[in-house]
Amino acid sequence: MRTVVTGGAGFIGSHVVDALLARGDEVHVLDNLTSGKHENLRDGSVFHEADIRSEADAVFAEARPEVVFHLAAQASVSVSVERPELDADVNVLGTVRVLEAARRHGAQVVFSSTGGAIYGECDRPAAEDAERRPISPYGISKLAGEEYLAGWNRLHGTRHVALRLGNVYGPRQDPHGEAGVVAIFLEVIAAGRRPRIFGDGTATRDYVYVGDVVRATLAATGADGGVYNVATGRETSVLELVDRMRAVTGADVEADHAEPRLGDLQRSVLDPSLAERELGWRAEASLDDGLASTWDFFRG
Image 1: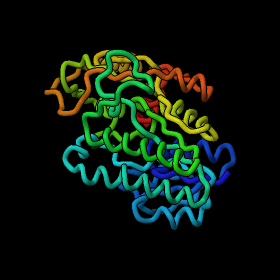
Image 2: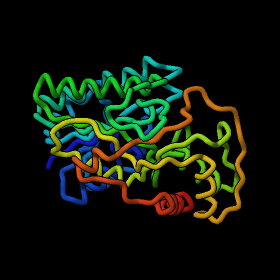
Image 3: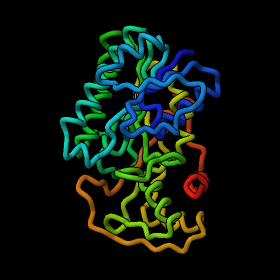
Image 4: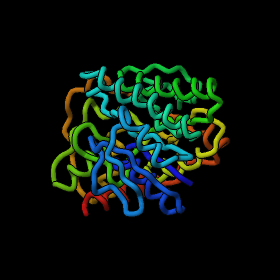
């Protein structure tokens, strides 16, 4: 089928592109390379260096997509706090422009949202109907994007799907800036340095391997709209994560501690059972196996 992947030169997007090419789809990548990388682009895809806020219509007119995998985003919590207007411009208005461009071509949108930043603090694995309590402009903007998808489904009879992702990790994740803790820690360990933990290390996250996220993204194609958690349903503390990394890397590494960061959650874990029931998807990669694959990438 004909597809567009916004943010297709980024971490998760490039893995989605790989999977689409492997199954024989026509793939167009729309990315302005703000955070995406040329080296993530794959032969066989058509690359459009463009911005979803101003050039989605032109790219979609050429690609004529049947499905749009919308991963382009402003994904930094700290940037969203410092520049909420930029965050809203990319994540809200950019998503509206993607939705309108997709509507003109009758294309379904599969939207990559966020679980932790939308649910806020969790006292149990959060299901899709749990209270939404975002504490950052990033979480607010992603939730707004979801509401636009749901509104377009009601207004235009579309079948757009939002996927609330856990803490995604894996090969190609950028360890610089505000990236996932797995990528940051493994690059530091590969360089022989000590990772830095913000807080006491008891904060937990639901770490889901990028290959599992890609399978969920493709499984959402053709679904009859809705919101799904994409996660493992298991939480891992930062201290336990470092222990797992010691075992995987063989490095006798100790971590430094720093003050907690504004906006960081103490506990985040998602309930993925709806995706298993309705999409036939569940996470398959164990944390140890996922860390081993990611470690292979970072040590070259």
